[in-house]
Image (cartoon, rainbow, N blue to C red; front, top):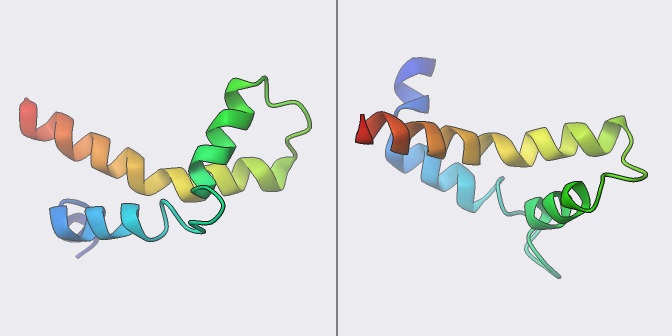
Length: 71
């Protein structure tokens, strides 16, 4: 069941557009976390790292599917 869900393009794209980008205003949350990370991650606590993982996981699944499709 889980294997079928993480290999389903529709589900992964839906996760990216909802969990992966939420909250949308003033900027997507994942984008803010990545900018913070690229800036040296100064002041990031355990909750921020968990938040980055939570919002980044759908994007990791999408990249995985794209690579799987290419190969």
